[in-house]
Length: 177
Image (cartoon, rainbow, N blue to C red; front, side):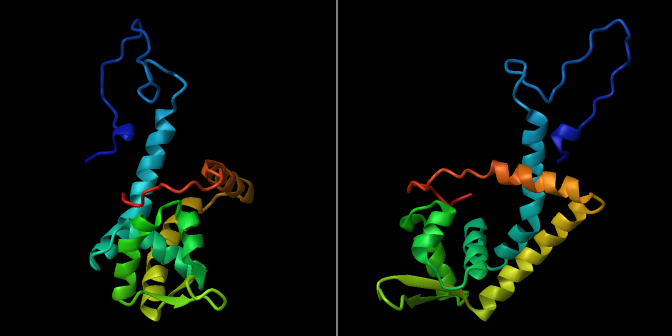
């Protein structure tokens, strides 16, 4: 299927006709930037697409990817920190984490002070999968940033950082995509 925001319609040119409305703007609210919204949709689709295919071979989905990513980046991460990072409930995490533990991708160990605390670490198998997924995504990012000067790269980073919601965590999120 073609990316709709890049589709071009060929119409005869009529210099007397009014300019065609910009399809990237809403007819009812011109402040909506559909072009950027669609670029974000398509960029995310392509950023996650290869990872989705790899994860599917394990019977995993995007929720598994997020858990693996953050646990791999933060060895010994308490479950409570993972819940806050992902902004999800224990119930949302339960099935995904159980599958990752049962299949040998993540280990849970009790905390050194509070034995009820569960600390998460990727196993060698989990690390290998997390790094495989990240390497493909890193290559996509590098290709997109190739040729950009440091100021342009800083602008991209600042834009993405400003897209992140920094409000304090309130339990109740869901992890399914």
